[in-house]
Image (cartoon, rainbow, N blue to C red; front, top):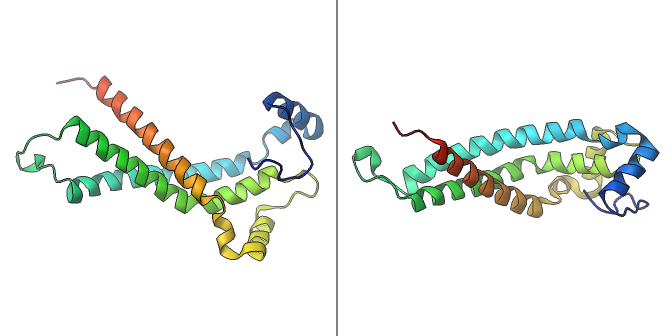
Length: 169
């Protein structure tokens, strides 16, 4: 969330936020921006997984020819983990670049006060008027780093657990 964006709210921790939001906006206030979050994270996840698979295939085929297709030795665990980490970084970077505009709109809507709350269309028009099309990419740097770091750590844990749980036949 963008702290202090609305200019009038001050909070002392998460419970204070929940109490004040419930008091001023009711239960609906806790879910402000939820549908936009779903509309942001669903495409982000789809782009992430597609990018991860594509980047892994690309890395194995072009950059780290492992030779296993031609009877060569299997790649080392280190090489496998490196390719998975690189795939996670590339996937996070790709997903962040593609979905940051949606996240910018979602964040703007979530932090705006409940008085005369604008629609998504109005936020889009306001962003274009204020900053042009580059306004949609506010926060790209932190989102880029966050999604790349998250994607890398998540996929390394996922792939490790997958190897750990695999049944040798």
